[in-house]
Image (cartoon, rainbow, N blue to C red; front, side, top):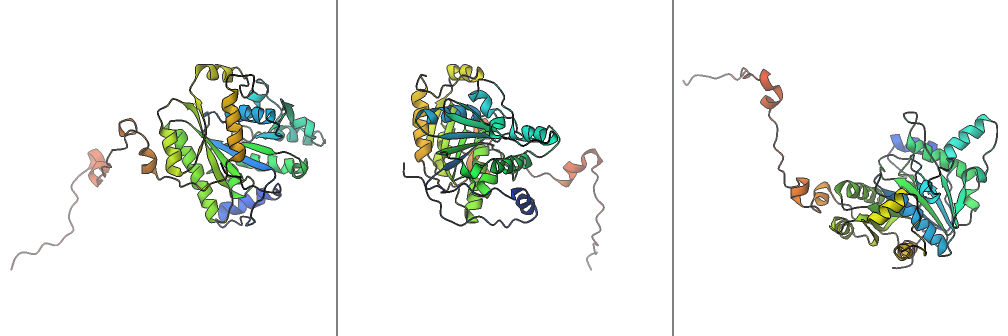
Length: 338
């Protein structure tokens, strides 16, 4: 793959809360116009909930560290499950909860309170608000503001991997794309309609902000739980992005993931797969995808499975009134023939 085009500096994260509020009422976005150059690669990974982003990222980051790269893994999903797999099931304190607790105690948050390491990977979780008590996207913004205070600009990493929920309809989760916080996006999906629907939505978001002058592109697709039916590969071809890896649907992988075991290591039989994924992630350039419409997405699947050949039948006024349906008295004036 070609040499990636990436940014030289970590972008300024100040005032994103205010700016996001402005975006909610005004669609015009002031996206940075500068051409990125090579240094730290900030990569946002998107996918449907439960599709295996955390499994993919925990093992990918571990393998990249084994390959000699300095990697920071940041979990940006309110479920906070990214680092749990990396840390053997242990939940590390999230940035948001730690910030709240320290503030109440009149103390400052230190990097050792929220960032932990294993196998050369540095990792932390942004976290999110309590259920029903806040917007997850706002939590993302608050978390990044705190990262800036902790010195995010000055950290020296080859790669910063961000694990994001695939629902980019929310401005907070779409922030890396909207504000050029990342140089490229990686999609995780499987051979099912719902995960590809989410992946297609992310492609649409990337294209939308590219039209506004943004630089973020899609580096490729990771097919997880690949059962060989081919829909995800067909999707990648249709939107014109490469497949970075196909992780098979395998009972050994499922059990190891469920038991929080790392397989992204040279000591594992799956090490070669993740080593290749690490190389592809590092070198894949950010591309401009061609998102599909709903019919195009459904066409990737057999119509017997999706109902894609169904023809819409319009409802009538009589249908809507049901048992109350009575002929309407006509107001038309009818004249007798002269």
